[in-house]
Image: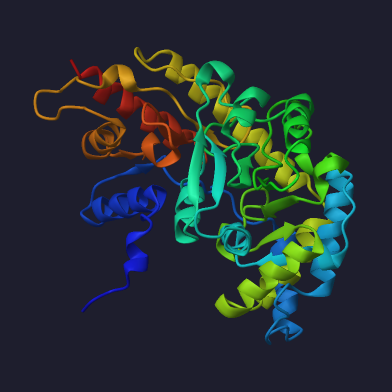
Length: 400
């Protein structure tokens, strides 16, 4: 059977690939500790689950409007005003089956063949692949651990060409945990002011998981700057901040032209998002955030422990993440080393060595545009995290 050449344009997400390999080992009876997937190990808060049960009993079981129920889009607007002091109307909001679909809608609606999409490294694995699906060209801006994995205005200016169409970034960042301050965003905005045709895709899915202040850092959205707000597309969702990964709900906030374009794209792919999830999401977005903040406090505790452990491992350089629930250390000092059987030549070898030897899953940095690094999640129990890193430490000690 001859399959479409479309499949050759992009790769399988490494995050999902590593999770699949971990499941295969578990099926053989091997105890694998998963430090690869970006999924909170918490259950969805009770009041949100109760709202879903009520929606079932109230028979919200029919097709939904493509951009989402009106009350949910109003709830998104209320959330954006409450948390971010941003003014949007329901017509600016499109609800999708996860933030990944929101991102795909936006890229397919904006990018033509040959258009350049500027993406700072490191970046979430799906960014580059979606651009390839749209036949666009990925233009990477390399950041470094010394920069806190954040780019500056001069780097942005140097990357812009007449073909630049979109700038795509996340803050807090997956995988690095970097968080842009208001001042840092303002410096990028000064560059965008000189290039009014560039659309900014701002992935803010980790908004609540911010360690730059207590009890939680204030999230700074680039949409707060009026001079660029009309060409900012905010991408957000409920998976990370509300422990609702399996519920699949994301959304965008954008100008009405982009919102309508995303609605048109979505109308041919999935139409409206799950009705029960939408009704639960209204409650999630408009009621008590304490469960989310308690979850963030636990992530902060785990982050502290992981950083303490990693400092004890020679050859690993690890910037301190300011948000999300990952560390993204430089492990390149292990390249060229061997345990007598396996030679580590790159990040993929490093991750596979840990999977097969320590039975701990991680994700190679190449997938995020940083070949010297590997991503480890701390969205797992403290017990699993400590055991996982004990295994990693022992496995790395064998490399000479």
